[in-house]
Length: 589
Ligand code: M5T
Ligand code: MG
Image 1: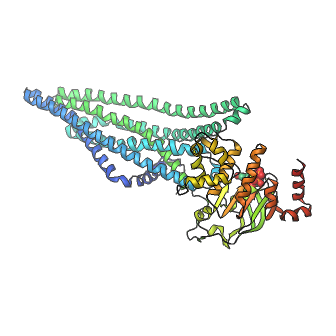
Image 2: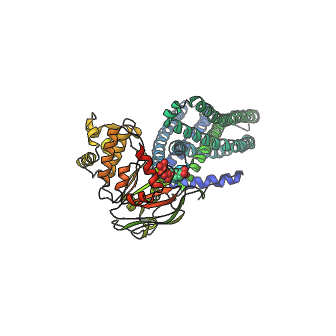
């Protein structure tokens, strides 16, 4: 289901209703909490109606009769009712907050788990900051709505109806006089609603923009500073920051108009009561107590209306937030396991690319008619200039993207038929940019697989020559790693990702060799590590280092998304084609 931006107001209501219905589904696990909170809310409102009536009784009955003990009783009752109301409201707030927090917790977890299913294609288009603002900001706004906004709106509404009922019961003529100002209020509220709605949508969207901008620029601060982009960035930031302010001020403007309008209407109602009601009292048609009760009730009557518009503020921004959250939840991952999957316990024969075409977007093909095969135990090297499409090939194999034409067959099954999780678990991927998470070295190598013992981790690290530098760190394998591995060198990060690939003992190793230049000693370590990593393993290697390439069973040479040569090192050299030329280039230095 999609939510569109409706122009008309009626459509807006239907639309809000859909969102509220969908939100309330998240309430169902906590429905008993919610129901008891509602019950308390109504009870609280009911108790709130009692005070003015007690005042009326005190004036009209006990003061009239000069009954001191009766007055004492009323005063005590008054205090008792207020204390009870306090207790009820306390309970209501506690339960409501608890429920709201649980719902938000569920929603946040649901959103995160959904985000984990999204493919790179999604993240290519979305800014991390924008997604973050949905996870944190939008859900916070929703939280506000659940805990205070909507629910107290119900209470307010109940209170309004209650007061109207009591007023009519006390004196219907005076009540009608008071109600005569209501059309004014409804009109003001209507205009206000319409205006504020759009600005709230704008506010949320602009906040997301600010988030996205911050996310990107804080992440790339080194580059910003290195290229002296600060001034330029600041200007950009000032611009989006200013846009945000503008839309915020717009709502402030409507508020600044609306609240005084309500105040004036309240004053008008009061004046009417004093004028008409006072006249009635003089004529003896109304008791003094009823007049006082009317004044008190009228004050209580307009207070919720004031509140209602305050709450409306929250509801508006919550609807805008809900819309964005649900839109995100409704974006299906474009790649997932099929309903009926082909189980593949063991990769045992071949991987085959059959006339595969691929475009990241539209029909700008970055891969054209790619066909090759790898048998189990073979090592295949992909070679080609930058941008030739090497990384794209392995992204397809790991099913991060879907080919636009052609098939990728694993042991004779289309990769699309396979259970996605099972297929990925057979692969260890060492990506071109080594990515480390915050945590320690140990957790970065075994990535949450607690069944892999520290001893195993150490063995893998020794194997890929990472143990040496790790053991020199103050805390060894428990040395904390900062976000993205900022406290390690590029070469060290690479060795850790090798250890990670090895410790999972994959049936297929995919290695996108980083081209980062490291010192010759590290280079030798990496070289050696690579050899051990690839030994006897089915692997696809995007290789830049000659020795890695030479050792491959098959070398596939790519140029502008096409396979131009294929064969062993010797075969390709004798052909004297592109490979030969690349080889010559490397040998020169
Ligand atoms: C091949 C384009 C890129 C290039 C071509 C990753 C990525 C690439 N491209 C996109 O449009 N969107 C993307 O997300 O695809 O790119 P590659 O496969 O990454 O090339 P490579 O791995 O052979 O290059 P390199 O530099 O890693 O050796 O035209 O614009
Ligand atoms: Mg690449």
